[in-house]
Length: 196
Image (cartoon, rainbow, N blue to C red; front, side, top):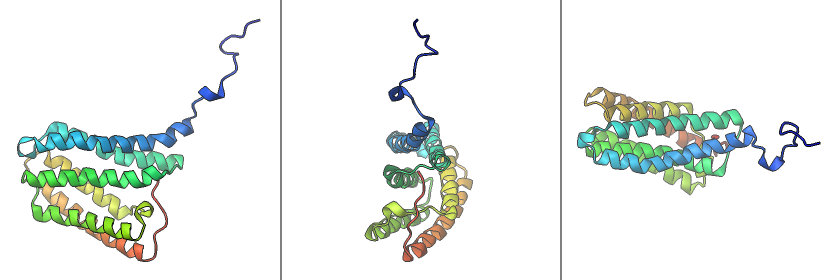
């Protein structure tokens, strides 16, 4: 007697577990964010006056994946070496590219752009020298600063209003406080990492 498809034994090799999919999804989102930086940069660099709806759409989508990959990683309790390195790299690459190009288009004052760029360079060099690049834990203050800055940059690509620059300045101030936190924590040896 032939077995029906419902009665046929499943093949372990073809069985896809939800946990395995969730384990890879954060890294896929992080990788997509990295890939998105190039088309985003081209669109914003060639946009008249730094105004570009397509660039803003890519930036928004990439920014949302920053929250989504972390949320999935925490929910699934998964971490990876790639995520620990690539996730913060993708964040800073996306933000700093936007900051540089918007400053180039005179949508953001250079005196507001430079402190953020110098902060990121300083923290990277400090963590690299102390071999802590893979062990940095993002603080709540740092997350708040990133959210404010990302929102302000997104709005700068869509409007000529000065309000986004004010929001950016607030985010910059918070990010400098977060930078001080990272420096203080590094003195005691930061060992925990952010799932991503």
